[in-house]
Image 1 (cartoon, rainbow, N blue to C red):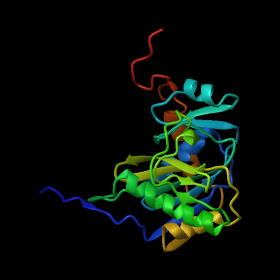
Image 2: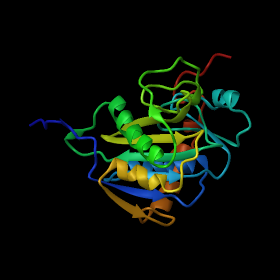
Image 3: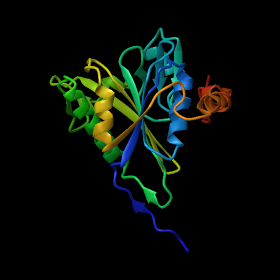
Image 4: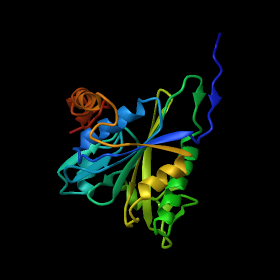
Length: 241
């Protein structure tokens, strides 16, 4: 008997906030986000970087990223889509929504609007004047901040303050976002969490759950630090020489 799939209401009943105290290398940050996305609950992770880093979307290349943002110590492929992002400035966060058998989340554009709507509320409550972009801006190239899209967060002059990329995995959602060109007051992560869910659970410490650090190192070794993941073709035909 075929199970019927139902669209799930976006708003989770609870979300777990983890302000990661460890500045991590680029691929350890990517692995940490993926591990949270595999969990059976919603998460909001706020984190920092061990070294100056630039990340690029799943189908981009380190060569292209370095041509746009030279001088970084790490160029890392994300599991999510989106453009090329300079993490040497700004605030990085991740939202994950759990996969549940028999249910699915709304389309990516609706999720993007919901998550950025919550973030815009938090930024506004933290002293940042901003709004959601109602339509795509002109294409400015692969640099993420040069091409704001609908539901990105912008200031009154139209300058992009926040953007993100998404990935779905076995019904779960991974949303990786960045805030730049503004300085929200302390406490904005807590405000963002409360805007995302009526109940906020907070975890502290080096591990958000037991066994996290070991699982993170294993995922880095087998996936993110592998030659296959870092191949410029990334499974596609190599460019002609």
